Amino acid sequence: MTGVHSTEQMTADLVIIGGGSAGSLLAARLSENPARSVLLVEAGEEPSDPDIWTPSAWPTLQGRAYDWDYLTEPQAGTHSRVHHWARGRLIGGSSCLHAMGYMRGHPEDYQAWVDATGDDRWSWESLLPVFDAIEDRPDGKSGGPMPIYMPDEEVSPLTRAFIETGVSLGLPRLPDHNDGRMVGVTPNALNIRDGRRVTVAEAWMTPEVRARENLRIVTGTRVRRLTMDGNRVNRIESVGPQGPFEILADQVVLCAGALESPALLMRSGIGPKDALAAASVDCLIDMPGIGRNLQDHLLGAGNLYATRKHLPASRLQHSESMAYMRAGDFTAAGQPKIVVGCGVAPIVSECFQVPEAGTAYSFLFGVTHPTSRGSLAISGPNLDDRLIIDPGYLQTEHDRAMFRSALEAARTIGHADGLGEWRDRELAPGPLAGKAEIGEFIAKAVITHHHPCGTCRMGKDDDAVVDPDLRLKSLDNLHVVDASVIPSLTAGPIHAAVLAIAETFARTMTAGD
Image (cartoon, rainbow, N blue to C red):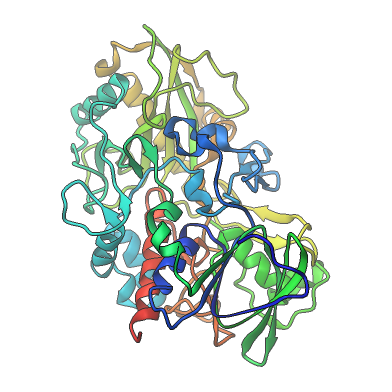
């Protein structure tokens, strides 16, 4: 349903705020118990743009009406640029906008989560059955609803040459990126079925699920603030198409994402006292960790080459293969530190002129575990007050050094004999004289990889925002279940990790049903 009259007061046993990837999964899983009434509240609408389901169209979706299209603060580390952060404003959230790559990550990524929380539930080994429950893999050894498609005949001949070149340089040829051995090269696994994107909402919120009498979906509705009675949230102040209204719930699960989840908490008076004072919000619960620890992956766009012959357009989603590796050594194993991606298109940042399609291609390059940390804050108490997003890009020497290594790896692949059939000449960066010029090129080239996370991180320390059960530490009936709880980035795209977080929480909640 979409319309809620302002005089109405809605009630539910459990309210999920945010209908994105985590929220859609949880709405389906937590409404399996018919005795539990579940209300899903989403700011956007149901997806309807046909381009959403066309894999190759994904870059063009950014900036449309269902993209929040956030803007960062100017970044000193990226040539003082302001970055657009696309986030989905619709049922299914950013699973309707992203590039569909699916990578679980590396086992050591999750050991960092165990170290942060003291809870083995977040280990690679413990999450393996969770991933199996999420995924529908071609090997038939999983039982989940989300297709994990391994491309074959659709893979671009350029991508095939990229993979063979990586192997010739010493990278292992992997069956996919999801068996724990991320170092190596392979086509990207994709959330695609029969040539169409599959969103989380489609995978989990099937017509049968939506028909459940105990599940109600309200769209076009934003939550202004949470009000509290003691250690419990007792009221959710919302505004929908018909005006303001209230929601009452026994349990509240916040799934609004790495930006809106901390923003809602701050508008509710929960957060760092100094940041709330600056936004003219009374601090009811001082939690310095909320909005801190903001992380994101960057990709250099790109190491650009002119083609010797026409390059056919990608039949998939342009960035068809990621080569993960250690820095400075194509043959070393372990947790990856850098990545090079094959872009079957001339992919560049706004600082560079884009060549005509079919005449050039880009090798993207990035750092898998950046150490730079940023922050998020609200600028005022109201829904329309902008978010102050400062990712702190490239603020550490570690990140700058790793980016230099990643660019070097991209150029090593790009200039190798195996790509001679395609390479006419390198267009960017061209000759670079020393560390300063390399750094300047990287600062102009990097773009977001669309993986913001960490702003309500889970942990066992006093500054952590949620405990290992994902309960907000100061309140008894509020949990946060989305990318904001991730304590540190996984090596690749974080979507698989977000789904694993949601499924793990669902299992905890339903254990007593």
